[in-house]
Image (cartoon, rainbow, N blue to C red):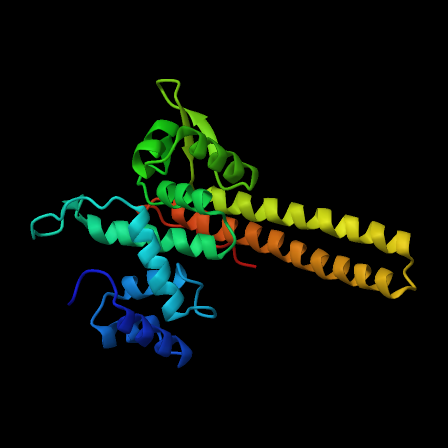
Length: 250
């Protein structure tokens, strides 16, 4: 399987594959490349709806000029930690970061979120994030503040009284609930606007429709998040050696 950077010709083949609706795995098979390489290439360059080979190639060249590349290492087997291929882990972290960015999360916040998520502990200190991401403490502080406001990260103190930033199973539930609350604020504001403009006017009717739609959506998000946490977390927390009590016959 070839290594190194994608060539311009390979990017053109990727663009054709995306246009034809091929799965990323199939595009990768035709290029004899890892699927993760193709996924990362597409997601970091506009996603499947906006990927262009020429723009992607120029963007990669610009990134290469900006970065200081380390000296090439001798050919060796990938280093392994805890049974993991560190190169594969690094590639996945890049892909995960890019997907978060495509969802609307800013770049530095996406990098911090991905870095925290792939650690076994699910928590890191500011100093550890600075070292892992090679960024400034101010960048980490700003990213964590954003993630905390969105419900993605929480803070806690460890036994050495250091502040740690934590992601766990409950974080995604908290984030969904924060999103639902934020949407309800839009609902309330839209309804106020409908009252100001008049429900019988086109603008007032439009705002009322916005309020009804988002109210329905936010309620569905909150209900689904509650149900998912009750079902999935209870199952995950049940000890493997214990058997659930049989349901009472009715």
